Image 1: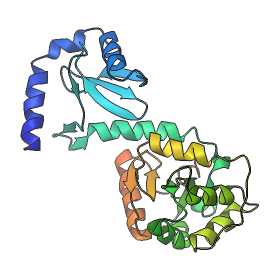
Image 2: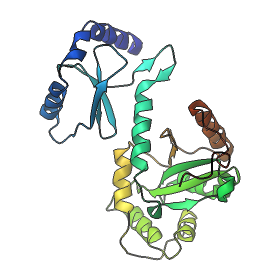
Image 3: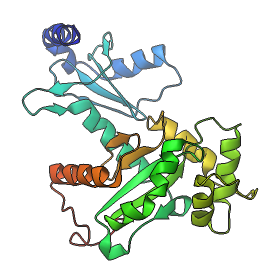
Length: 256
């Protein structure tokens, strides 16, 4: 049924190809009428005739050039077997995470010359699978995976999990404090200027709705816990698809 609906949609849009020649200003006007608080950050022709790809933050939708028709969901290239929409989202995640100050991350990494892959992990102090992931942090590092943690207290900014995250990020030794907290120990209460709120909101912006949320260096999101060997193999596949060497030492070392 879903394929039939998509096929019918694309047939309709192909018949309105002339819309892609219209002024994209109509798209901005339509979005502003639908969602006045939503900022359109980019509009460009999509691979589908008659459709523009419209980017709003890290959201991607498709619209006809006259702004009348809007399509949500993924667009697939059946010849390349590629999810075009997810590729666009990955690019947006990568660009967004590139703006994060490394000083605001809690990083567990192998020696620089041993780094093969780097991942950003949105983590919650109390999440069972986040704790399971961290209990194997040495194994990830031995496989050449550098882990950059960002805080994502799933219960929200008024929760005890948020307070724990603040205490960890404000600790004299955040790495030790994070490890202790992941083992179920209550962190020593600490307060300071910290990035926890901003990281939580950043996670929402890039589409995090569960933890751990693993994001590869190319922006690909790998939601949920993955064992060390499985994560290493998946990152190898992503790197191979990008044409990048899987040995970062060969590529000149860490990107951070």
